Length: 328
Image 1 (cartoon, rainbow, N blue to C red):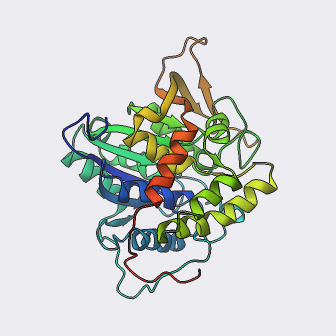
Image 2: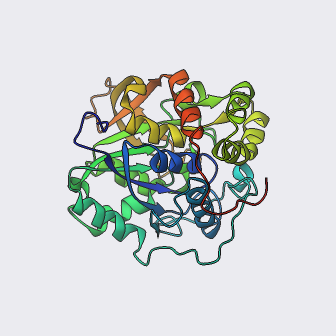
Image 3: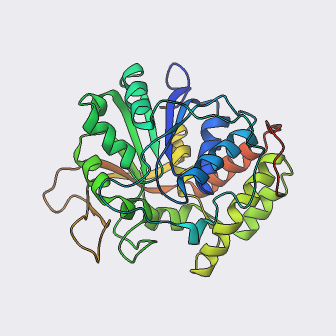
């Protein structure tokens, strides 16, 4: 549902482990009028938890909306396993940018409680974009038996659709970090849409250096912010043979508010491996020939040019940052 199709902007929460493209996903919620951005819930993932919070404040400042959208601190570790860092990919997650942190605040309400409350207050209408490990979502469904029914749609960046992983040969990072949470979420009965790593992201959400140069040429503070924060992941992506920077998180937010970007999608039975060290976090996506009941819509193809144009258009907004951003 877009804002035009419904009665107004879409009530939205982004559950995130804020680093690099997570920041761009936050910009979708912050800058697109189709989104009524109600809150950010933080989950343990890409980089150190406190750094993720700093990255979220930084992004709010870059969008000129510092202090307007609450940040709720959620689960600081996976359900049963030790946290696994992706700092080798993301560095500090901000490209070395920072702001004066004096007076910055986070909400006193825990992220899980915020998810439960916002779902109840917007029953059937709330959309959650989950772009980190699914620890907060799994904890909320255990804590509140009405949570699943109250969530309108859950958009998940995670897994691969019968393809390769990115942290291991088998697993995508978000599902690998907390496979028990991912398994519980897919079994719970949510209305789920999945934006996978492979093949979708690797084919339709990679910005080449030529495209990154187009964004840099936009010349706005937002474009400069984007260019700086993606530098670290660009270097890593190119080192592993990917011809540009990867943008699965911002794609997840974008297809929620602009479903016209989706060209192909199918229903799948999705489950997540928890019992094997070798294939921990593997997303088994059955496409209808194994006698399993589908539990998720998996995006198979998007309008790659349209997605790039959308992100470039967002970054062209003449936004004045809420605070001076250091590090350029």
